[in-house]
Image (cartoon, rainbow, N blue to C red; front, side):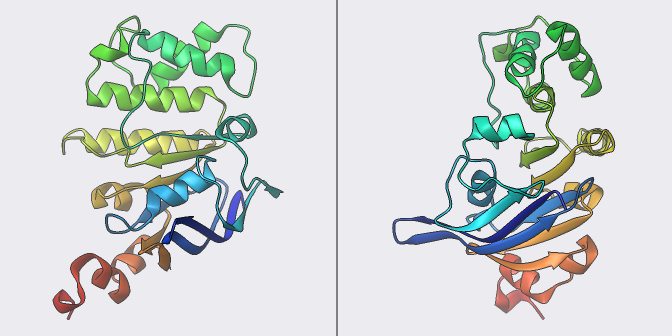
Length: 239
């Protein structure tokens, strides 16, 4: 077991965005989080990654409680994440974007530039490394963000809709990349709406609806679950 959440709850005033969510993620697996829009998936990920402090519950990483730690503290412990809207330093070169993560990540490197270039090659970054991040397209930005996350020497990578905006022709290669990241020793939790991506990479998935976990298990088992179908399609459409 690498990560465990127990009864995590996050409120915004009177709104319960995440309610009593418990999951266990094993080392070396790709764990998916799915659910309708507004189900609480990103809020839950924000609790794990330190952007939100839960009102209730406990989060454990490598058998150490990390509940309420800051994103910087969690980064140095080995947890990195990407965002729905890719964030970069637009006026820095692509290479410098990754070098920043190498320098300020959890491990010192004798040659940060060399390590950054190796990571960019690993994720298949196909533009010139000295191009400004502001001039990159969606696919290039996504690969750049993955390189930056890996540059922090992460053991757990949190992906928030990493496949969003990709064309059908781009998806298979991106699925292969996520598998290669896992095979390199990085455990992954991913939020995703692209079901082809979920079915292509995930070992297990959990489903959130109205902030609560309604199902967890193997991919095919969950996708055939009546409660999951009801959450996505509405009760009147489930027969």
